[in-house]
Image: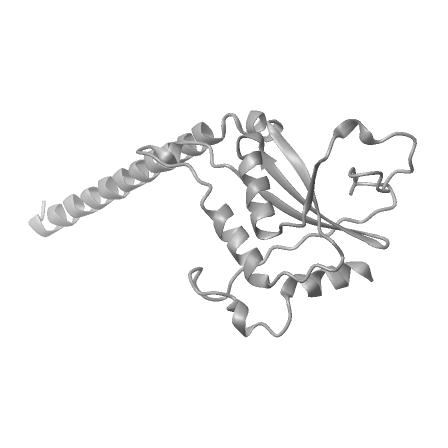
Length: 197
């Protein structure tokens, strides 16, 4: 056999072995990643059921500057798991909701019970006149579907429509959208005015 042909065959076999070895390593990494994601989220339903929906009511003549909201959201950004194996622990979530109904706008925060007191204190620190109510499931009796009674709401009515949007930054995450000093008017005011129409 020609030594050049033997060398080419050896290189071909070596290349196939390296490709297969690379694929095996990628599969092992993929399975490891999926295992970590599964392990972290294995009790997600239990954590989500151990949560509270808070309704935030602000007076109509609220004149607090936007930097109060900036401080509020900055304090919520500090909620995270820490420690040596923090990537394996469940990450707590807060949900901020603006609900627009005919003639009414309501603000809600869905928070784990573990952080409920901290969330209430942070809201009262930023907005001292805010009234915080816990939304109870048993408050609704004999009302039309899709209407508000007290502090309960249902966004999934038969006649209703639900829309949502996801915002993605064009630039890097560390760059601000706008610094509050540069804002001509409050962004949340634009959103809430749109909901009134």
